[in-house]
Length: 498
Ligand SMILES: Nc1ncnc2c1ncn2[C@@H]1O[C@H](COP(=O)(O)OP(=O)(O)OP(=O)(O)O)[C@@H](O)[C@H]1O
Ligand SMILES: [Mg+2]
Image (cartoon, rainbow, N blue to C red):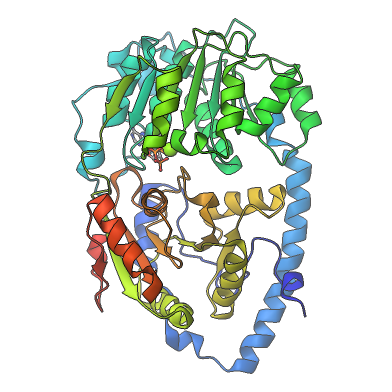
């Protein structure tokens, strides 16, 4: 049977292990419990009789294929195009009441250990910024107690209308650092697009628009997400209704703008997340073109953890007086321990198997350098008996959305992917990143390993290094000023599971 027939796109199947113990973005108590409960299936379990395995796997695959088809139907019926949906949950809290804060539904406090990357603040409170009460309500209901260092630096400056070029480590809260001032400054009574948030990938667009909707839950700001791979017609229809904040990828927004459907003449704010990526040759022409549709007085906010020198031309041209924030005196996260394992190419899968059996993986992201290798590896992992999904840019968008959604919700422990998921993707439960293929440059390396250890939490990065990679490994250590140690035979759980 053709492997493509057996595996629904994006699913390496591996369905025998339904990840009962997995924690998604559930309450922290649940997370702790499941982390204690979980021990990944060891090699002994993998040595069941071959016949049994094959039969069992085929059964499960059939079931999963059916489930997959059913779920896809449900998805298209229930969600349609994400860009057509605007989340506005009616507030039951009276913002004008004296004890508004005590009426909020605040998630339980995350008591996991956090590093100085997020705890070394000046001690500001969100209330210090005189934000709208409704916005404060959304911030607290999202579980943010006080601003992170990058939020302390950016929010007050962005509120003054100044352009910003901000650099801060992965997972330290850059998204809210630009979303909060944008939501504050939008006038909800003015029915025009007042702000655009540009991001380089569709999945990041969905994630960022969700953050805006959550933070703005008690405001009457209409957020629309628009990306390639979805129906243009639906986006056009949606734009006939009020939109205050548009989040999306450059190509689609430019397309809608050139058609005159998306009107940016009153758009006073442009945030570019992963700005260096958006200024790479792949995106820069579209971005430059889009800016020309905006008023000359627009405020531009550039955010990323990496700003290679190539960004300088853009900065000098469009943000000559920008306020510069750089919180990266060192580049790598304090909470992430980085290891390498020296292997031959043909030993990589075996090595991964050993890692699976030894590590306390809560959720992992495994990076490969090509679409083909992602699919092949997902299949191998499945054959080893571990659950895994896969995602890459050559998949249909519906399938990409389904995989992203399900992985985020903990339907599967491991995700194999290309660099599609390297930037910005925020899944708090990921504690292990594996570079099955070593990346080609240090920016990519930094963003990849930053998928774990979110918001100052602990994480582990393991790099499988072949003979050909050895100079790259050395170069990246130098460029990032970090140490990638040889993997020991035993890894103390306390360094990535606390
Ligand atoms: N003030 C805060 N208090 C608590 N949690 C926060 C706060 N700000 C952000 N977070 C959480 O931290 C996580 C990481 O935030 P975010 O995705 O914005 O990081 P980032 O700096 O953009 O990272 P990356 O460089 O990888 O894109 C998110 O889950 C977010 O909800
Ligand atoms: Mg980000």
